[in-house]
Length: 236
Image 1 (cartoon, rainbow, N blue to C red):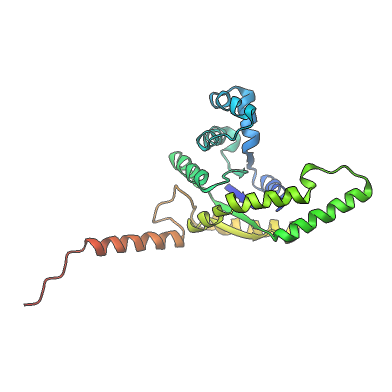
Image 2 (cartoon, rainbow, N blue to C red):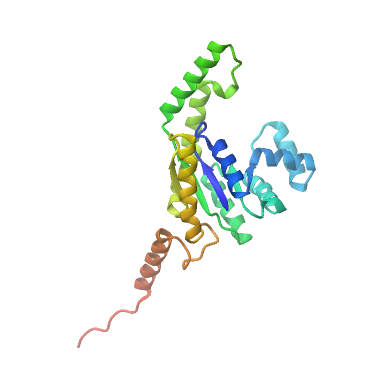
């Protein structure tokens, strides 16, 4: 099972990823953790990104894809993986597609956790108020203003991925505002449907592609055929 989890901060991706790891015996891959591990292990890519990370700059897309490529080749990722925190942009998704295709790997699904952003902020505000009442220390992400800025960044950079994967027939949208157990059940139901059908992603062929993709391919072929068809002979 090879998955991507999409959703804004606070949507519960971490909780659902842990559930999927336990259920399917796959690994959760965080690009941040992978980059730090590569630096610590002094791999060629790790040495390349060490200076970039030390300066606080963002790593180029091709470097991050290279780190992902290294990680998914390890034995514990052979059964499957969940990508967490990557891709963040459409160019990153395209680079990921090319890398997976090179290895003959296809994603099984891209799970989007749909949430109400206003409700998320209200949830954080309520949690902060309760923690302050109990005198508990606040985490940096327990700040409604910070959450709001992260939500804006998500809409601008990551949300376009939803349309990208929907166009590729990969997206499975789940109501992330439901109780945790219900969200888990909905994801499992979506993945069961995926397992019963063909895989999606860059490694699929037109014959095995999802109906939406297959239909678009067929239309493109028909348009091409019409353009190249010989003109009919005129009647005498």
